[in-house]
Image 1: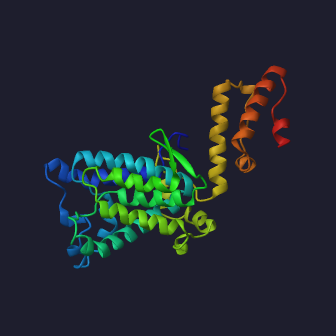
Image 2: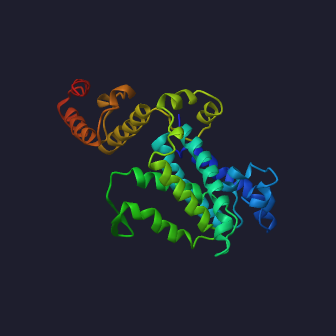
Image 3: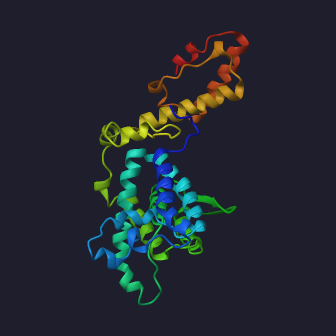
Length: 289
């Protein structure tokens, strides 16, 4: 079983694939072969449809690769924790292809006014996930660089900041953000498959293989399992913070913790302290929940 702090499996593998795909060109001191995987309209006309996905793994210099790794780790990792590894993988592929198709549609029009570079890197997919999160968020405002700004403006401000990232395609990022917004509003309902489907796919190759990779954390497709895992981690932290003795150890049953909130767990930490002091078994107090 992976440690609680282990990185999400799919996000970690995305970083490794990006390094592997970009390393040959970086080691030679020249960009990775543009005809191999980047998104270029001329190559797609020859039937190289694999570029609709492979472009998200390509970086042409160390700085853009480092920025891409941080973006994958933050955005893809957070998104995977929220939706599960199965849905994350499927949506990553879907967002990649939809963003690429929209980019190819708009590129001839935009290139008449501005210089448009080839789309590459994970950033379009990251903006798609950001678009989904902000569209479906119940928050009205959030902190950004110490200032409270409307949540709906966050991705557009991020789009302006991303303009300064090396090898970043403004048009590609814009297309990713539009795809995320459309999905977040519920228009891509065909991609919102039932949770039961995700749970079944957890037991199908290659996801069964991802579960066996040591050092990586596989996020289950079931919301109940994800909540149980989060609650168990919180209880472990409470035990560590309060130095609970072995006699006061709490046995975590995943099915019994799916409905607990953080307030409940903070209250229970006080119960654990009192049980240490009074010598009472904690089992009875938790069964009352």
